[in-house]
Image (cartoon, rainbow, N blue to C red; front, side, top):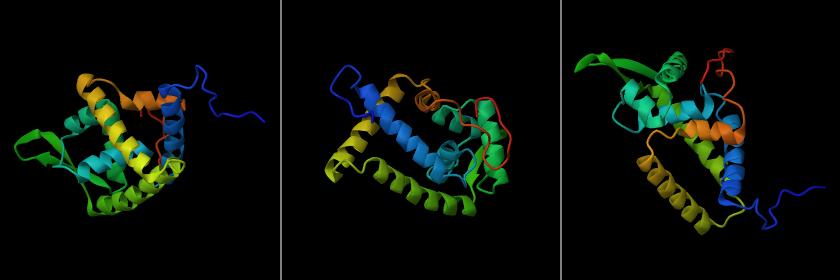
Length: 179
């Protein structure tokens, strides 16, 4: 039997470690979020719509580093699922604000519990204080990287690590480039 445990050789790098953790997180998260269109990407959009002033569609695309045309398709699917709605901004009728529906808030609360369980499962081999330190350090590193390179596409990085793309839009049976 072949082992995947690193032996301390050149393959044992931060990149290898992060790729293994990210791959497992992504696999488990996607399988736990099948009720949300576009899985983890839809989850992040829904989170932003719930936990902040209703963002504009353009600002949301920029914040999550999702191409604007892809964001439109993603929001179409979230809206069709009854999780968000787009409202005209009263200050500028050309702008659409993304608002979570009550159903979206309920789905997100349940999804957050599932994602928390996924994170605990992924980090099960690490003691509690180290988990907290890892989460805080990862957040600081990600924030620093994002601030220094705001055009870095984290979705592309995930696709490169886990392989392929997001696949067909969940629940709709269609595919879109870049979605």
